[in-house]
Length: 247
Image 1 (cartoon, rainbow, N blue to C red):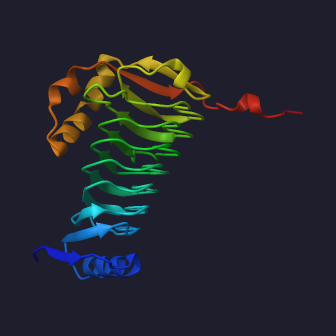
Image 2 (image 1 turned 135 degrees about the horizontal axis):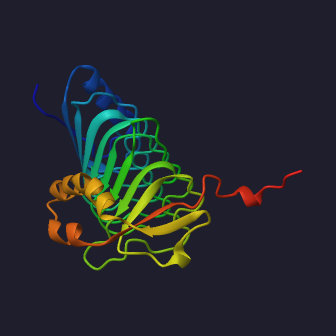
């Protein structure tokens, strides 16, 4: 089967998503959506490791929610919560994304070439060998990695852009790690988080991910690989233990 194109101009999101699901169910592997503008829930719940959905335009919220396997490529920006509770697969955004990117993500990868909004990676989690990964090429806003229970967030802040602008980074984190290029001011750390320098061995461990990211977006790799990195991790397994009242 060859590629199938859908002109999504002025198409209600329910109709668009019904058509996408029907095409995947019929065995189509390469689906291109043109003139997307705000349609929500694209790719939600879709399964199939060999399915690719290309979005030309700006998808609405909850892109690839509950998705397990496919690749979604967005040529444009994305709204809030792409990768929400995604189980597996890959989301590639050639632009910026809104708030709560990778919200509760539990597997797969989300790559954002430019910037993301608030609460990126909130409540990400991992189980056994399944580890979700969010990589951001630009910057993230406040409360990055809030309540993280697992997974990996990498924010590069390339081209002189600070990796994080805002407070509450890692607030309530009790699993996983946030890796940033350079360092962030400790006043930006949230409760229960601490910042450490990334060791050379740890840097080597994330190199394959960075290589995939720069290859995906055709980014100059030298500044990425030569930079120093820091990691934000849980200060303890119970970051809010002191907030409770014990009898």
